[in-house]
Length: 303
Image 1 (cartoon, rainbow, N blue to C red):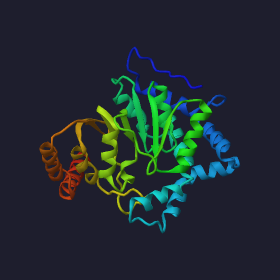
Image 2 (spheres, helix red, strand yellow):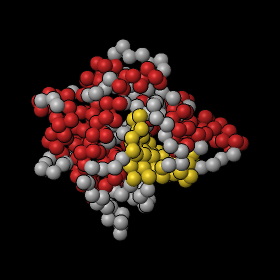
Image 3 (tube, rainbow, N blue to C red):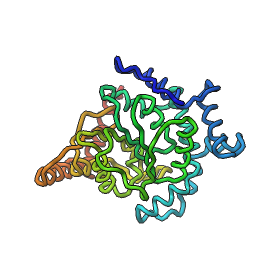
Image 4 (tube, rainbow, N blue to C red):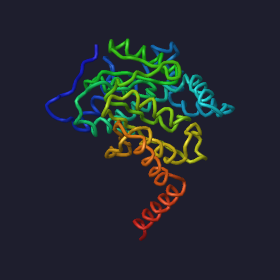
């Protein structure tokens, strides 16, 4: 059974938290997280090791092929796409192993460092993917729940938790309702950009948080020419203009992560913040901001 390995006497450093992340990926008998996750995927899938390695290395290309011909007209049709992505956990775990070795940005570790002042409580990993964030927050002392629209991902995560004898609660988004007033913290890492109906998602997340609870998310928006076209937003403003009107207060950011706290607002206050954010977050302000950042970058690099 996995042990909670936090030291509550002081906040953990980034390197200490990264070591926890690495431990969540490196099972007994292994020292290399890459080899550990390959072995784990072989055990789960029943596929030969060389096939597992190939899928792990080419998961992005496989996803791109499956994206061709997808009906993008509704949230339901988008959910169908994710049901087909049984390769996603392979690529995700490879990416998590890269993070554990310091070869890629460990986003969830950065979030945990920024929230080191919090007392562990009830945590939801919204859009859990392969479930590593859930294992990580469990190791930090949190009571963990995980939610995803993809049944293949959730099946793997359930198996993964069972193998480690770690308790967890699992929600299949679209089929299961998230409980009300249940969580102190919800994270959505590399998730918001894949949600067609942001307004409805934010309503659900607001309802699920306890009063004063925190929602932490990033927006991995991509150019429209990017091959990962299931990233639905080329700008961040379609998401950010919706958050405060859903009942959240903006808090200081953690690196590239947006942090919002659940609050109760009057109808009038909700209308006002909605109007203000419509003025702040839109195509015009995003274009101007992008141009100013480009000019600032160019000025810094003038010889």
